[in-house]
Length: 429
Ligand code: HOZ
Image 1 (cartoon, rainbow, N blue to C red):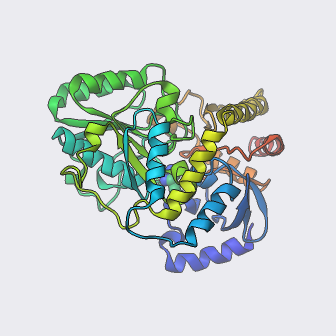
Image 2: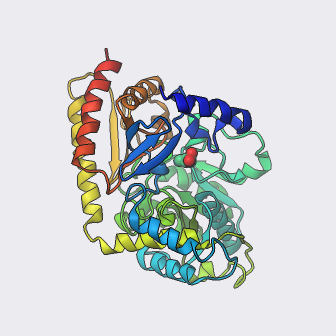
Image 3: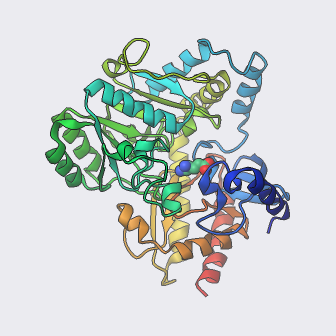
């Protein structure tokens, strides 16, 4: 056990609610003391006691190239010399917007914000403003940040702590949030039947990552596309996790289904706080100051975040084989995990899309929130700690995806699989 982390956690709990600035970090679902990390490089993180771990959290997604990637660090350091914020337009914002519109197929115009939460909630406001309709459809177990109207059957920390929503969210805020079942287009159809012309948008994680990784079933995203088009509602992809992660153009490029609006974050900011939302020009033109839908932010388009994001996106564009390498790495990990679990009589479901995935402890194939919740959380907690003590840092919740980076290599995968063999023997003893 990390002595320094325990000491820091004690101090933290006196001055920070729960000792953390974002709930899932607290290890609430797996027990024990969260690791306090002090540095990281490539695929490795180091805790306050100097112990090193192969990192599969990747700051919850942004670290596509691993930690302290030199081109990102240099870009940030260089930009910081000329000010950390202007609150005025800067060249880097234009360059970033050009990169995003070049890379993400459905995005013709884009607005920068500071987080994925802000991107998703602003995109919904725009969808409502554009359509003049009030209701939204979201999927159980999907998570779009912590805006009030999203906190109904949400994934991530809300699921981790087994809450239906959150105190403080008035019923009036979620009255217009309609819930559908992930991978079940018929459940969306029924909502359209009942609420016809009142639905402004259907928001979906095209690959769910906040109830663990749950890929879309063939035809699911296509069905959402046609339902929205037929009913005059907008299709909003929350690609905060999948954007620049499952392909350079995100899930919409990987699956060939184009939404009307897209929320971005994580990889977009290269590890600095950044989010964005974008889409068709005629919709984006409704945003202030060109249109009436208001949204603003002092630090939006912040030069440090834009510099880091530009460095990350430029690196993606320069490396034509990046996603093939990530896929090969993911495949190697998956094959090893399946081999380790063979003949163990330990029910599991391994889901993976490129460099994101989840090992669920359940005897069924996980396709929706109910399936994700059927998992054996106690077993995941045992597994998590058995891996942690062998130097492998996994997400501390069954409801979060793991992430690989381009800095992971064969050595890290082999070390992970060797640790897993021992861990499985321990938890299955
Ligand atoms: N909601 C994030 C993962 N899905 C967690 C962010 C954090 O705790 O840093």
